Figure 1 (tube, rainbow, N blue to C red):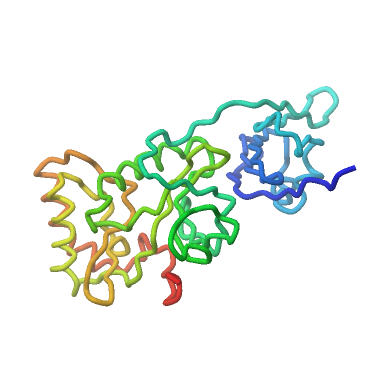
Figure 2 (tube, rainbow, N blue to C red):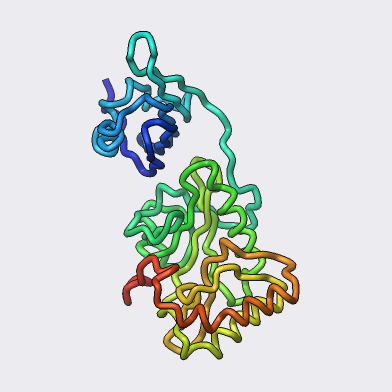
Length: 278
């Protein structure tokens, strides 16, 4: 008998037991997407899922590659949990414009920096070809669940438009899960969040973006990174808009001063340390 398949929850979207809840489970090197139906698990079971899901859920053939999704429901007659497993092709980012592909299994998470954003290192077994890439810290923007692909698709489009302009971070490649592209890998932009004293240089950077008829869409001060030499790089293009009107571009420029003065913490997902680009 072979060794049991190592299991762990790598993502989850959990709310009330009255509704569906979603779990992304790594089984060896394969990912399983499990949905628990309304009323199938109570609050206590949902809270215990991260540490004890293998015992809470009905037995599933985690080691088999013949399925990738399962739906868990409670039989109204017997009261027991039942599982319906299936395999299907899942949605991914279709616009694959960068030549490099990185397996998400070769990214070691250091910390989360937002819903779709992680600070990671590339593991030694990565086949990603990039000079001095092993151990290098990078930013991974990945969809956790299928419905999030639409958001990463938009941002992927933005980075394609900006590649080579120096306006935003350099894209290192696409991130895939078993061949399905789920995100983008970015070089870390070292620096600090902008403040009101940086208004002239931030406005100049924003005008460069606007010269391409692109609206940033979220000009909070944490999306303007000021480097040690005073250069400004824009990040987070999840709200960008192509073919913006003159009125939209002008309004974004006029709002910038107020955004740079805002100390509410909006958009601050944790600063990178001095060594986070090593």
